[in-house]
Image 1 (cartoon, one colour):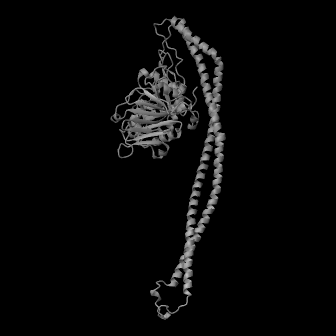
Image 2 (cartoon, one colour; image 1 turned 180 degrees about the vertical axis):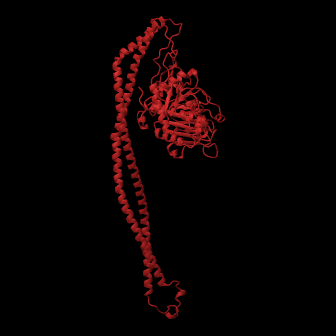
Image 3 (cartoon, helix red, strand yellow; image 1 turned 45 degrees about the vertical axis):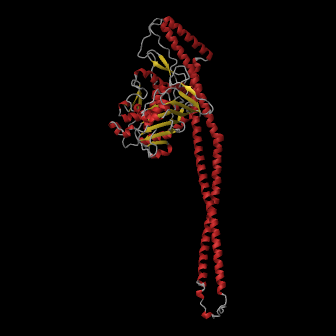
Length: 623
């Protein structure tokens, strides 16, 4: 059973599977030079001038995840090896190394510094684990899965990571392709490509499919083979010790428990987020007050020094005043040197200053300094009063912060972890019960096939011997998710979306997606890719976990037709980035490769790398 799509990103983050990848760094090694580009969780934007290696980055990522060869460009000649670092949801860090000319990979566990690299083969071999595809599939929880290869012959093939790569790495020529986002256009691979999408959307592979025998094989031989399979399945079912009806009842109860647990988890998570917000506010207020207290302490220290200077100046001026007054009271006598009487003495020739004016000046300066000192003391009193008031407020905010932090660490966070653990256990139990039910379904198909062979009646050939494609209920849920995304992006129209099984593509507002201009094909392809990622995460289903979109906003700078031109001047670009920033953070990773820069308001919420195409300004390009 596929869960309906939750409304808010916080819910699907809580339900997120533990099996996802995130890219961290790609490094080109040469004898004399290196070029590195780092990535982070959330939204990464690589933008800038044309012919700077932006699209080549997407090709290189595909090459480092198992692609056969890398396109030759002039700048690549200086490099010999490429390194790709990535992390898994369980926190482990890995490094892949590969020669630019192709071949096998070296894998290093970065959490084990002393470990030696091991070799992973580039070519996928069904049932083998020593290759890059098997390793990557193991990391995202899809090891040893089977997908339908031919619906008429009911044959299957082993799932390779290459089947998933085009769903996670959407290159420029594919994003504007007229065909389905789920289908490359090659009829020989259509069945397998749609089966891959079905596996992601349902979590169920095609290992239960029984191949239709060739005309040259006798019914007796086929019956004997089916009998062996029936016997093996019967033993497995017997050892399981469960009846089909009991399993169906268990599945129903589990669905109810999962829904109830999800509601509890949502409520607990919302409470946690509220407390985190309150704690953040208390933390900010506390730090703001502490900053002001530090300023006041610094001012008081400076004012103390200024006070000392004022006091020294006042004392000096008092001394001048007192000396002048004493000098004025000394009796005037004949000159002891020449005997001249006071009336005939030339005092100004010896003393340039008038004592009265000196005393007056000293008194005025002293009064001015005393006034400044009084103003300083008033300011100090105000600062001391403010400091005392702020210290009380600091204590209140500190107590609030400690109280909220304690509640989060000791009560709410453990409660959320408990709900998450219980939810994960229920999901695992549901998967186990579903697998057990699938055993009965497989047994039914084998027994029906045996009856048909025993009756010696040729099996009637139908248009498809095995049901192929995406189940209608799942396609409907995915269509609703894509519709919601397009509405949030302010895509023109009512954004009514449904999946057309005949074309394996979506119809938007009654118009096939592929019949629109290449710009609208690009943005709607991006919506499908983002919708697939979110659908898988919301429902605890496997997915590579990251998404690379090359030129999703093509209609803004290379419009084709009236549909594309209609987007000019709209806010779809702003809403596109706003949606991604709000819905994809530490639990998701989306790389956007574009020519135009994102809106400036997004700069602090994304990781942006600009290729200027100018060797004298910023970073020229990828290499």
